[in-house]
Image: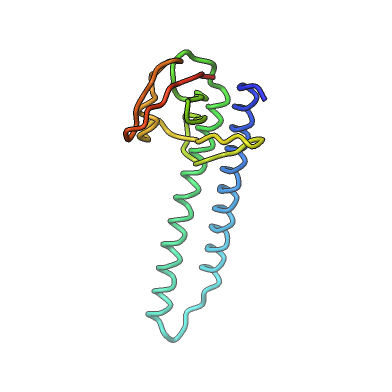
Length: 152
């Protein structure tokens, strides 16, 4: 698989993973709202109020997760629009002596056709170590030396 196709496949998997998170968050929100609206007041008023407060907390958490996932999806879609560059920047697929990395949204490791790629943000330690470097440049992280072999 050539590198532009590999990059496209990684981005497609990132979109799929993030869309699954969005769908899960939406389902959780719907479920919590239904539970909240169907909760009836019991004779144990304090327990009822405590339960509703817990549902509000869960709802806020699910809404926050949804907002984060929607922002990640927007950022991932920008990755697909990013062009080739001679330096490591947002949207770059970087091949190093230790493996592949794609800059943009940190979602962890993604494997395509048996080849792993780590999705990282520029704010991560390895991201900040590579940011702005060019093909052939070396960088060190936690005492381990790496060399940038290619940037797509």
